[in-house]
Amino acid sequence: MNILVTGANGQLGNEIRIVANESSDTYIYTDVVEIEGLKTTLLDITSLDSVRKIVKENDVECIINCAAYTNVDKAETDEAMCELLNAKAVDNLAIAMKEVNGILVHVSTDYVFGGDPYNTPCKEDQKGTPTGVYGKTKLQGEQNILSSGCHHIIIRTAWLYSEFVKNFLKTMLNLTASKPELKVVFDQVGTPTYAYDLAAAIYKIVSERKYKGNDGVYHYSNEGVCSWYDFTKMIAEYAGHTKCDIHPCHSEEFPSPVKRPAYSVLDKTKIKTTFGVEVPYWTDSLKNCMRNIENV
Image (tube, rainbow, N blue to C red):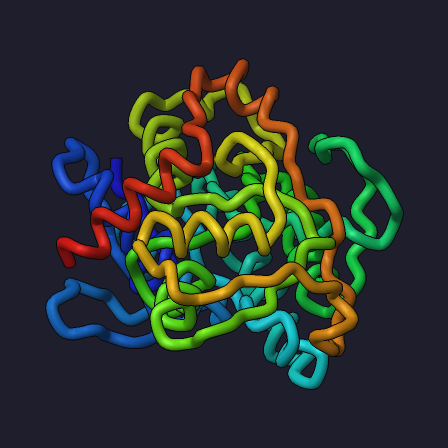
C-alpha cells in the first residue's frame, strides 16, 4: 500500500519515518519545506488540486496527517492561517481519500476540550468545548472529516514531545541547565506523550490494517497524570540538572491570550481495546526520549 505522510519533518512525522523504516508499504513523506538529510516531497495541503494530483499519481490509499498549525498563542491573531491549515487543509485530505475510498489517519488535540470544567479523563464522545482559535480549528478539522464521509481514524493526543524540533522537553532541558531558578505551572494537569509512542501506535494500526471497520475518534497519550511542574521536575532529575530550583506557580503568573485546558488527561481505553495498542507510562517514555536525545 502507498501511504502519504503530511508534516513529515515535524515531531510526529520524524518519528513515523523511524517506525516505518522497514515497512513493506511505501511511504511518501511530504512537507512544505525541505530539510537537509530528509527525503521530502514538497506538498501544499491547502491546495485540493495538489493533494488530488499526488494521490492519483502515486496511487495513495492512506494519508497520515501530521501537519497542523500548533502555535496556540499566535493563532489568536492569525486565525485565517490557523483555520486554513487545521480545518480547510484537513477537508482537502478527507475529500481526496473519499474519492479513492482510502483511509485518513488524522492527529487532533486535547485543546478541543477545556471550556467546561471536568476532572475525569476525557472520553471520545465528550462534547468539544475549545477555548481558543487553535482548539476551535482543530475541532472543525475533525468535523470536516466526519462530514466528508471518508474512512477515518482521528487520534487526539496531548503534550507531545520528542527528540525533534522545538518542544517543551527540549526547552526545559535548556532552561534547567542554564537558570538557577524556574517557575512552572502546577494547575494544568495532563499526560506527556512521547511522539515515538504515538507514531508506533499509528504504524501498528496502519501496517496491520486494523483500521478496517473501525472508523472513529480515539485518544492516545502516555499513561499516568502530572502537571507541567511535575513534568519539569522529572526532566531536571533525569538530566542531572540539580542546581536549578524549580517552583510551582499558577497559570495567571504567565499571562496568555488563550485559556489552556486545566485537565488534559485522556481516556485511552478505546484505542487499547480496539487495536491492541500498548501504552507506556509517561516517565518510562521520558527516559527513553532523553537517552535518544543524548545519542542524536
